[in-house]
Image (cartoon, rainbow, N blue to C red; front, top):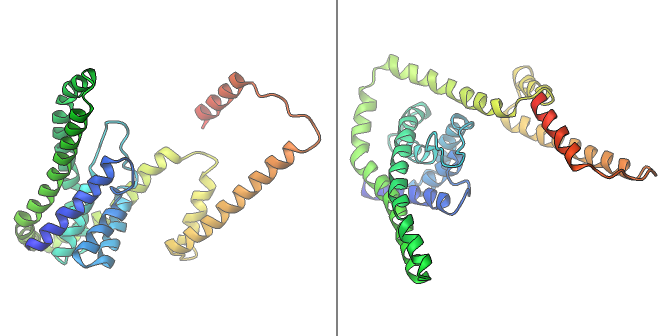
Length: 271
């Protein structure tokens, strides 16, 4: 159990390291689940659980300082519990969701402490004390990464047996309900994503993908392959049209920046 807790703590630290240095994608469930699976010695299961969680959190994004869910932490713990408890993917999803909400709370607590350090950073800059500024920055980063490592380590050491007992105590009808709910959550994730992407021009492509799966029993890989081919053909055709329109023998008219901005704004509002 100690080694497993150490590996999960390391996986959570790696995931948060990616968040610290920018949007590296380490918080995506597919990546986080794969990291956990590799460290726990079950890469295939980690990828499978990560893929299932990716669909659940597909429409969840962090904008600015708003973090609706810490899906990186939820994916790490959900995948870890799914592997260590030898449970179904539905159990991993059910455990991941509340943990992701807890991760948001913990991150906000860290932000309160980090924000309190801003006056000290400003003081070091005014004094041109770059060494002290860098030292305080390194301390802040060390606290951030250590906090997540300890959370992952303690969470597995103290929580695996309790979670296992809880899962075993769940009646079969409730477990069946969790399985059904887990099957519905990916649809919710896709719906959240479609809210931001949906417009009249993209609607036919959506229904084309739906028809390939519903009527021709295509798999996700097959649909993705066809989608990539169509995207390449559309992009090549669009480039060819632009090239032809630019070399049709007529001088190109200068573009009015204000008119262009108004056109883009009208198109955005109409969509």
